[in-house]
Length: 243
Image 1 (tube, helix red, strand yellow):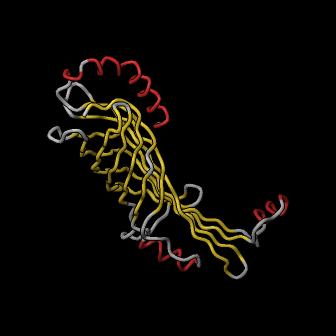
Image 2: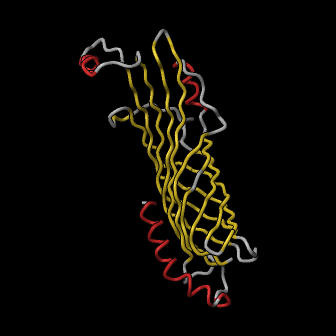
Image 3: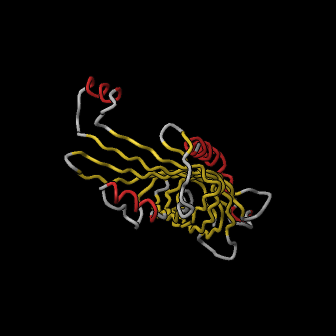
């Protein structure tokens, strides 16, 4: 979705930027329209997950978080001053691995989120944009566990799948949910058509839906296990920025 939003916004900007530049005084509110690359850093609550992956033998995941990438697009709307609407998406993962009894074990934790964005840009702050907003959308996280003996041939791989004594094991535990994420962002225009962003938000996961392997229901999930996460984001945007 984000890959579609950003090119449309850029085309719109190229066709209208000259008009805006000719009459800066026509704007009595902050205006921005653009999109681009959004690197981020997720810091999820991994306390319950770490209890299990440590017993699996691969060690705990870092509680300081992991790198994610994505994209963001937005545009100010004329009917309400200083309000902008848009969309964004982020995703990333981290993994731990080790040798246990001669077999390679690996745990991979992944997290992704995306949705529509609404932001209010504070008009009393000049030359930069400070915006408070919210993301409404959906997200998902997963934990994949692997155990195998390393490289194997095509035929051996199929024998392993069909044999009751197979040597390769793989499990996937996943969760999908609606999300509500309040955000606070600061954008600094480097040039009229280029800006950088720094910001943060907190992802509240609503309506958890836990599954195991091939979309089978996972029951008795501990109440303490959640998919909430803090995220810190940056942005490199191309567009039109009138602050």
